[in-house]
Length: 155
Image (tube, rainbow, N blue to C red; front, side, top):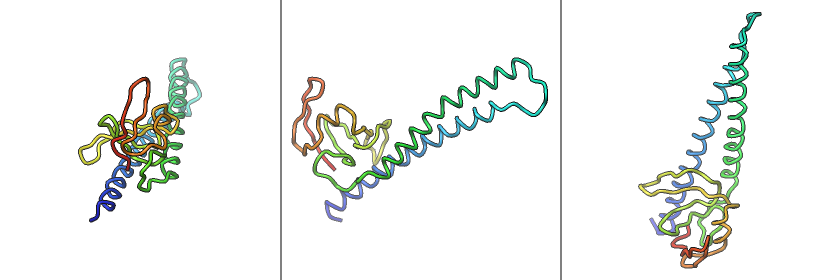
């Protein structure tokens, strides 16, 4: 395998893990939403006491609280599916970058995740740190919050 093929395979593994992570987050949020929505529905009997009604309203409120994360994860998946993840030599949406010995995927914000023993995290294209380094190449230096960083790698 050539170095270019190795880099492409590594990047594909990272992006596959990113999508898997977001799909898991969506499934969890959807499961919470569905559970609370189900518990919010009163049964068919005619008389419900105040406790039944209060519990139903509380579960409806909790279901509503999980509605926003469901939509947010759907939106993130849409962004991931529509991002160009081809190999990059500049910091841009879809690039995997390394600076300060940390690795980031420029696409959507995520929690940390592991691929081949290395830790990555997704960052949004609206994040201040991304805006500070957009368009840079390996070896370029940028400043964020008064600290200088060097772009160590772009994939």
